[in-house]
Length: 401
Image (cartoon, rainbow, N blue to C red; front, side, top):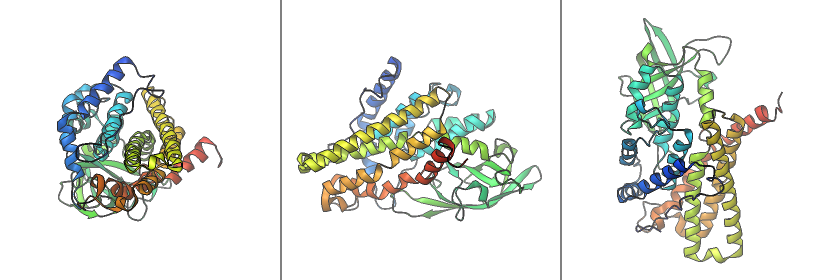
């Protein structure tokens, strides 16, 4: 346990999953761990644990410190603020970040999704303009895909970009996006053409969120961090705001969604939660009960299997051989463990586990109550469990051919 009573993460040691790492990569992991063990990092993380109702993290000092080392986006080219390393080093940073309790949403959105999308589909000018600030931890970017009536089904988009001289006028409404209140810009999907092929006619834009005509409203949920509604009315964009080809945004979006589903962030978060449950079981004496001990052992094995799956996906990416079906299986398997972890934690803690961080008597700063509310999102984010199973069935098993 830490000095403030919160459960410490047990860093993942070199074992069967890590044995393939090179000596340089093992040394890199140790450097990253040493950074997260610094007193300034602990103080920053502890301060975030004490946020009050409807308070959440925006730009983080920890991200800026990582950016100073080139570690926030280590796989990015040096000219864009990275170190020119591989997906393996990027996976190490993300895993250690989450294990040590640093919020990862900004990283997943800015670095793992929008930034990586620009590297793959953006122009050299767009990369040079936007990526360095993200890699330094000085800006946040977010994603505007989901709409109220159609979820993330891009084929049913109603947000429109209407031609206007040498540019477009963008109008529409996006929902359930995160960090938009802190972000400088967003990757926004809009319809630019109506044709017989439903996935044709979708274009991706870099939308400056501080533009006149953009209104960001909070959408509160069970979690501590809010969603947002972004209303866009007649915002003018030019060719420099287009990412990729006009009318051909569907395929690169689909490809990027497949790439982000390693499950790395999910498995690390579940490991941190689980280690806290083990610490609580020791403190309460429940760990000596045969039934509790057996369930802890079973969960530990499943989480280790999930970590092995996530790292195999990262290794495939590093080798330039990503597997969309295996990635879907990894994401599905890992996130299916969420309920079991939090339910066992609730049983171990008893009624005390219902106290939130807003209650002065809540143990571990109300950690369990917060993660209990957060856990359902794991099976929804980055593609629902149902979508993952559909990918496995249709593409992997060819059941619908």
